[in-house]
Length: 164
Image (cartoon, rainbow, N blue to C red):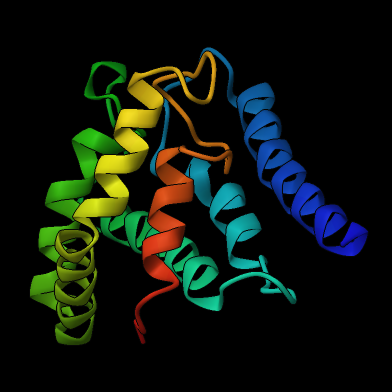
């Protein structure tokens, strides 16, 4: 188990370091989409270890790769007010473009959406637990894989399906 934790920490730190290096190098300059390449490369290097769901790792890798590819194909830069990396703003149009461009991706999305619909009991249970304080104080931005987090619930749903 220590090997898995070490792998996860190393990959997370590599992605974080890529961001820190780019910010340090380009601070006070205009943001260019290509500035995100080191982060995209760090994510591309992530691997699946025993105990991790390959579908989850692959979904994250493909998501970052696709976001980078689509954004670099449509613009060179994004204004700060565009909130370039706020996922809840960018995800719907990016997913729409990906579904239009890649039929297999569209099929995978349909499978995932149906799995979410089929997981109403799990989602309701975890929502009530979070709202009711079952997990103690939590943050709206819950990227950690803690019990009850959005990431944890999504991972539980992904374990029940096969997405190519």
